[in-house]
Length: 442
Image (cartoon, rainbow, N blue to C red; front, side, top):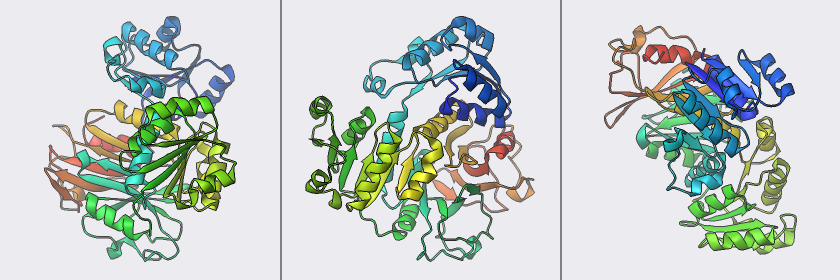
């Protein structure tokens, strides 16, 4: 496989890095010379300085023979033109990052002009927040296997019954499994010997109701009914539209004109013109009673400060958008309950598209060191016809769940993967290639 990445910012770099780690040939096109030199030092990829929408640059990058072009610059127009041009030159598939306002126009089919898959980081974040609020005790939540499996992240707190207990003690209900654990800056693919410590963030998978029961017991958090959103960005407006159907939503922004505009868009959300620094306003609007306080501006400093104010004034849960992925842990250490990065979510969605076929879905864990993936074997897959015990696997790969028809199987050594199965696996990033080989996806 041969991939061209247009845009060498953090999003493009993360995508290129993941591809290189899987042994895929990558060319990165970036306008800024200093950034080109920086990327060349960090990953084993050809880096070309230039504009990715320029046909000459695309030809130099090998667009006539490329399997895929991913355009993730900060310009929607450049991304769209890059995809359209590459498609005309012969590139098989194209992916474009676009601004959220493009997603409001559902009657435009970009596949007809050469863009096979388009996405908006803002829309992705809005859906991520909505999922989190559906199960407020969770730090994150995802659906896999067409909704038959739920994955949720939770923190092991000081008073938790899981402290100092090993997984082999069957401390979680049958039908669930721990797929990964975040410990500080490290991601661990746990064995039965793993013992939980305070502050661990665990990813549990299983039947939706079972997972929800585990998560709810990890916190005294109640169902989210009242939400306050800071900032009138397109992401915030889209989220408010999604939430106002079942929740009481208030949105605060200091721009009078913008408040007037979105008041016409939002049907039930109360739009408030005001300054987030005005503590008396926040108190008057009942910030101390909200179940979730969400800051979705484009400025990391403002999102952090807003959430700290929200927590100080009594908001139960705070969620912040973080542009600089290096600040995610800092936000959480400072007291923000959940920090969401559009760049991390973007890389996850793009990688999911790249691996379409046998691979059904992909979740990149926050540190970027490991992934939880769902895939099905091809007809000639090496894994077929053998028990899991007989398959030689490197460390840091864990088979989590086999979905067969409507049945969920927590696999043991005697289980055999069948051709129609959907299999969910967790693994360190550098081991993904081995999994793909086993399932015939090499």
